[in-house]
Image (cartoon, rainbow, N blue to C red; front, side, top):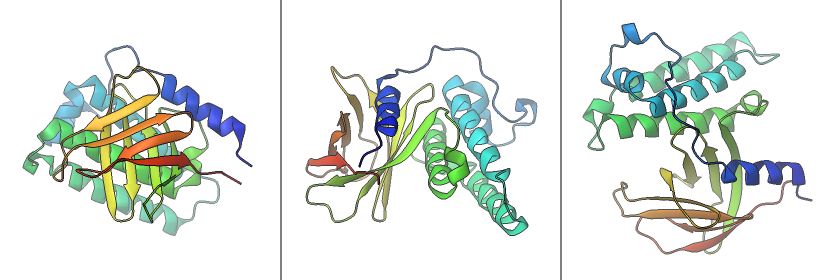
Amino acid sequence: MFHTGRKAALTLALALGAPAAWALDPSFDCSKAASEAEQAVCASDALASLDLELARLYRLAESAPGQTKAGRDSLHAMQRGWIKGRDECWKSSLGVPLCTANEYAFRIYDLRRDHAEARAEEGASLGPFEYACDGMEAPLSAVFVNTQEPAIVLRWGDNAIVLPRVPSGSGAKYEGAMWADGPSLFWEQGGEARFAPPGGEEAVCKLADIG
């Protein structure tokens, strides 16, 4: 049976628009921002809101009851590796702000997927949720990132993309054309979605039951 509480939470999250703008301080000291990515976060409330959500999830994973030293050391190593990758966004053809936003979104996905404790509290992200899509062998996994500029992280097989939320008359629509193979779409309405991978044909997807 599908848990109606979780479906209701997803429906509510998708109905929410971007929060009202306000001045945000990220989780780190902006006076010590060294990389172009950190400087971009300090200059943007949208990026700062991503940083704060990631920091919240990281704290939950780090302080989880029963967390072992080995588990904590592994988490720290993964975070250091992620920071190094984020700080290389100056090399990206997407530009530093967009590359940085994508890196945050991917890391939020990974923390939510890999650490149950990171999903224990309500916050600005939700998921992962699994969809079964017509014609696709691999399930489609989605994390909704409802920070100041909402986006969705989608993974299927070895593929992963981030799509920004765009206005729509109904449901929650995410669309973008920044990926090399072409434009992509994910449009969710009441547990059913339309998904087009970059440059590919649309498929109908259904939210998987959760036993």
